[in-house]
Each structure stands twice: as C-alpha cells, then as structure tokens.
Amino acid sequence: DQQVKQNSPSLSVQEGRISILNCDYTNSMFDYFLWYKKYPAEGPTFLISISSIKDKNEDGRFTVFLNKSAKHLSLHIVPSQPGDSAVYFCAAKASFTGGGNKLTFGTGTQLKVEL
Amino acid sequence: DTAVSQTPKYLVTQMGNDKSIKCEQNLGHDTMYWYKQDSKKFLKIMFSYNNKELIINETVPNRFSPKSPDKAHLNLHINSLELGDSAVYFCASSPGTGARLYGYTFGSGTRLTVV
Image (tube, rainbow over all chains, first blue to last red; front, side, top):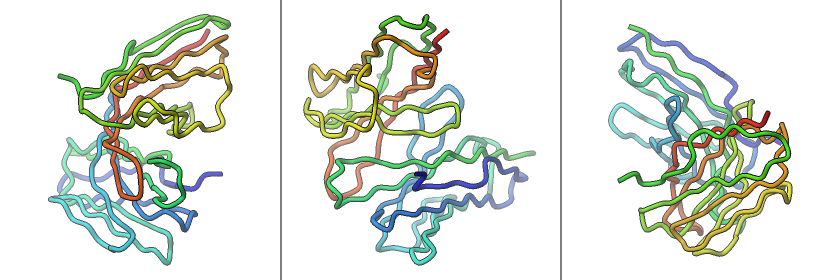
C-alpha cells in the first residue's frame, strides 16, 4: 500500500531552467509534507516542508506547492543548477494518528541537471 | 562532528550470521529511527524510539531487534540473516514526536549485503 507516490523515477533538465518534481498521496490524514534530497552514498537531507494549512512555501530557489483537493504536491527548483542533481524524496506525516513522528516516503525522483 | 553517525558503512556477511549496526546522534534529539531502503528504493520505517522507549514497531521480522541504551544511541541487531535482508539501512533522529512537524536528520546509511 504505497501512500506516497512519485511516478517519475527520473527527470532531466537543462541548467538555468525550472525543475518540477511531482508527488501524489492517498492518505487524507497527512497534514505535513517534506522534500528530502539525497546524494549517492549519503543519507537524505531535509530541503523544504509545507503544512496542509498552506498551499505554497518558498525558500530561495525552492518552492513547494500543495493542492489538497488533488492530493498532489510539487517541488519547483528555479533556476536549476548542476549541484541540484540528486534523488529527491517526497515524504508525508499524519500528525494526529498517534503514530509517533512517522514519515512515509515516496520512492524518489532522480534529477539530472545538464550543462 | 557528524550529527548522526552509523557504523559500519558497508557490511557483507553470509546467510545465517548475526550482525549489528550501530547509530549515534550528537544533536540532543529525543527520538531515533531505523529505516530500510530496499532494492525498489522504498524508504520504509522499521522502528522508532523516544527517550529509550519503543514507540513505533512496524511489521518487521522478529529477527530484527533494536536496542537503545540511551537516547543518543539506537542499535539494530539482526539474527539469522537472509538474502532478502540485503538493503541500505538508515538511522535518523528528530527533536521529538507529536502533533507538529519534526524533520529527520539522517545518517549516511549502512549497505548490508547478505551472500
């Protein structure tokens, strides 16, 4: 039962252009969403998050959009840089289900930013 | 000065052996986790401890036993290793649990290969 889905395993973008990574979820109890970035042989690192009471959160070149009715979120990176090449994981949390601080992750999207 | 450190980074062992993976965090966090990333790249929670108390125990074979001697350490012991246990195991920590967002800080992972 995959509650968080990233249907694009890979994405290739030219340097300077916008990267858009997508994530869909099925559990309507999720109320926090996060994006993590992972380089090879390293652990995932936190990038940006959004609460379900918002529809947009911005941090520098990174913006996360949340569409609750569609159960969809996206991460926009603009402008994309070669150093952004990594695997991006979407994650979600349901705060009030008594499940501790459990994050449910998607399977990741490999972003490649080309020169 | 690594925030969440796991040892060993790589572990190759034969079927039927017993092995342990150690994790330590120096962030002062109250909560620690073990996640497993399988060959399909799913990052799935296994266990979580909050102040040495087990709070999340997903459906994991009882050959896997976590141990938290103090809140800065969470070790994972695996008995009678099987081929299907081959994966990357990530340790993580967070400041707490509860009905707000606590992002994780991950270790760099332990790649376990069972032959």
